[in-house]
Length: 306
Image 1 (cartoon, rainbow, N blue to C red):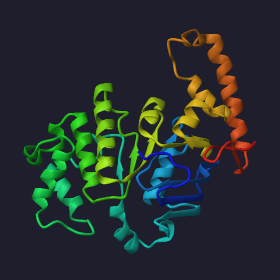
Image 2: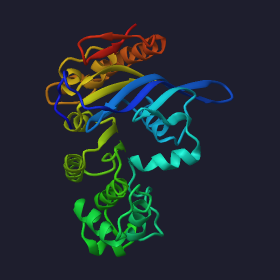
Image 3: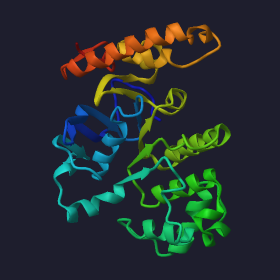
Image 4: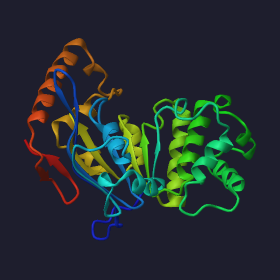
């Protein structure tokens, strides 16, 4: 995380400019990402938050070039990566890494941890002279021991597997790590440990995070700035404090209202839920009809105009 300073910001690392992604079926066209724009500075944590199906993960996959954009530009260090050939893209891939949601499915079960890490270390721009020693250092940096290098993924718990995934992500010396729901499959205690680890590694290495999550408590703990997504659009964007203390868009307010607390326990009755559902459906319809014009609430706080 970085200190919020409006007068002197770190240089831009990633710029997303009006990207779109549609999925076409026989009966309809689904706008998964609809004219999304945002930027991430060096050393910053930016979060995309919203319910399942809002376009968060698709946006992450577009940045990784696992999917191609239909429209718009993705600039990394000022270079448009959305138009790079596979050969040129391969030279840039070590700068952008990803930590997936499911640590059980993102590690090859037939490879030992030493081989998994060596594979990532070998694609660095500057390869270390001793890959084995570097693999040991990486494991220790995420709280595991060098003896674990000789084991297979199935021999670890979920939290340990996610630590291995983190070690693999930082093995290439990336400048940006996309964290796609990195703790949602873990229990609460392990979640807290992994989040602390991610913050400590960011302080040590200085990379940026794009943090994708539906868990507002996790987002509040981790991020500097937040983009709230609904129906493939960013409907509100601001600093962490602006979004949590002064939400402006009706969808953002609905997100916060959906969190059960001791104070609002009485709100979750059948009648109130039905009313909230009707309000929610109206908000979704309104968002679909929104233009891509942003209204400035402050220098760092924007929302989508009606």
